[in-house]
Length: 143
Image 1 (cartoon, helix red, strand yellow):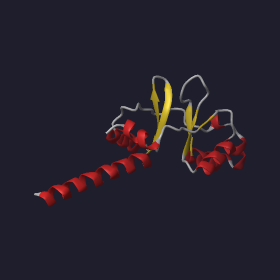
Image 2 (cartoon, one colour):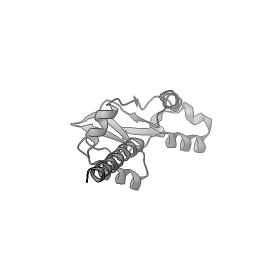
Image 3 (cartoon, one colour):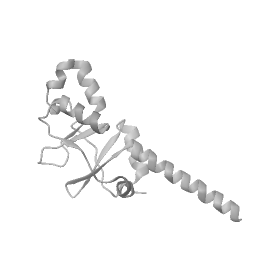
Image 4 (cartoon, rainbow, N blue to C red):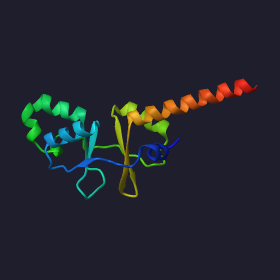
């Protein structure tokens, strides 16, 4: 199964923030939207970085509350793994697990078209397992 299937059900909306915005602005958006990460974009490329809840915790832990007044670019993760909508969901799950990150932006032809979280992947995988179990039950019932 591909990322395209997840995005078809989930949608393509991606919340972003500019690198010069403050960490407190990022925190406000994360809290209001109840999400775990924002993509950082600057116009020249689809993904300049990502700022996650983990990044916020590290920033405040290392720099205290004054970190909230600093620009997102100071604390964002700059090396962001991306995928395309053709990416295999099982491979993506392995990449996320091995890399210990929870969000992967989806980029097609230099454009940001979505974002996949580990929650999206797990939800999709559970639906697949449930469908397989139901198919087996149906097969047994008609055998």
